[in-house]
Image (cartoon, rainbow, N blue to C red):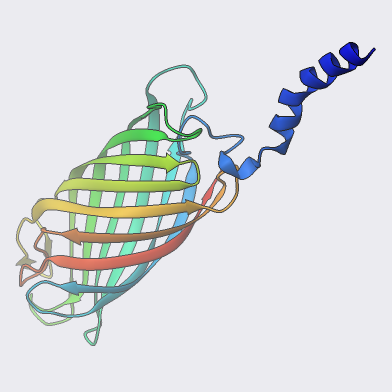
Length: 238
């Protein structure tokens, strides 16, 4: 009888250990990489234009949709877009940027903690630039717009299941920026940055974000670069 009881207890140990393990160690839904269907809002409290030294602040948002991400395919299509507005202090001027991109993503589990690994993604984008109330043209207070294209690439590294590190870069060619009878040039170059995502629940639905961005794309009549833009935000992954 004692031997039978010992065997029964031993057989129950793995199940008991699994029940005792905290669920926060890894997501119960997302153990194969970060989700690609989400909505995110951002506030940019600080930034500056390169040569003019003007302070910037703004807001924006991003949306993303992932398709067939639960399939056995190694690569999955994604559709992403966003809008961001940077206001130039004490000027009434603003820089608006919008984009929509179609691409793909994949995730590689390198054998670390459960839920960890590194994802790669890339998109080809339609890019829209709007300069609001900028000097130049027939009078100050003109608007100028441009429609161009871009290519985005990034990593979504999960050192642990609840933390994501997202370096990213976009090459943009806006073509000709024009408005109010004036040509503001043909800016092109790189935008790049780093975003941190901290998931607040084990299923990776709710997250807080923080990031840093800069650009070497000269915009406006004085060919300004946008530098040192910090952002904080929140994300919900569906």
